Image (tube, rainbow, N blue to C red; front, side, top):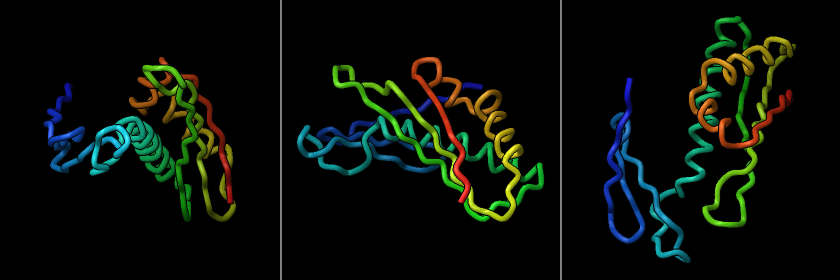
Length: 137
């Protein structure tokens, strides 16, 4: 299976693409010549990671019959100071809310996502130091 897309220049510093029938615009901030018409590209990497592993975890927990009230994937990352600026560290925080959540099943779902299913994580972890933690509210 191959993926492809075309990022079409939309003037100034912005680009537009259609992904799965959804239009996405990326742009730079005003200080660097953009018009702030959309998010910057690097944070979209973090969104891709959060969405990928989050969907895995929700799916796996459903199969384990673990009921959660609320779930967030928070990502804290560090960018290098020198160019090309890139992420040097990514820390995932899995935030769960629910009654009597079985920590061992939460852990297993996360491990399965990160070690087996999440292709975004598999790609990023080869280039960036990664870590994670679980928080239960």
